[in-house]
Length: 163
Image (cartoon, rainbow, N blue to C red; front, top):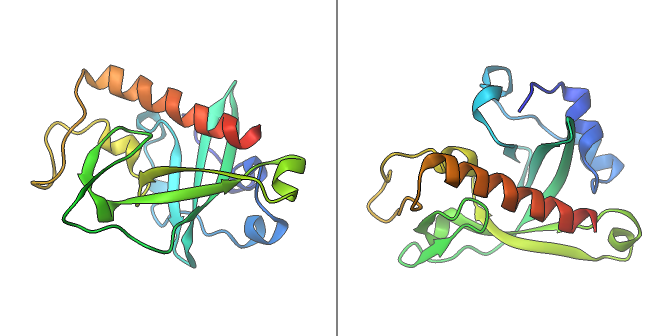
């Protein structure tokens, strides 16, 4: 992914309200991101804890979505599966995120949702060599296949938001 400016990130959000776009907080480590090693920019907003963002690069241009995390969390005792990075981990580390669809569909209140790593760290998880905790399971396959799968599934989700 190529480095993005604050203005590019804000302009990329296809389903954000004017208020959401104006008030979003960039990740704390934004200036330290190793852009060559991420497949998408994903972060939770520290000022709006239930809000998150994913920005991908499609045809050389950034396309982003505003996400909302479910208020409830699942039990730590049960495993859960992230639908983007295909990582199995404790359920309290996976959240249901919804995204208002863009355009007229979003104005009518239509949304799409999926289970995603609660901290939106999927781009790091597909590169793991070993589980970080006893309950995590690293997805099978070569890292290149896990990375390309993540990119495909993330773009698919963004496509559902775009309609």
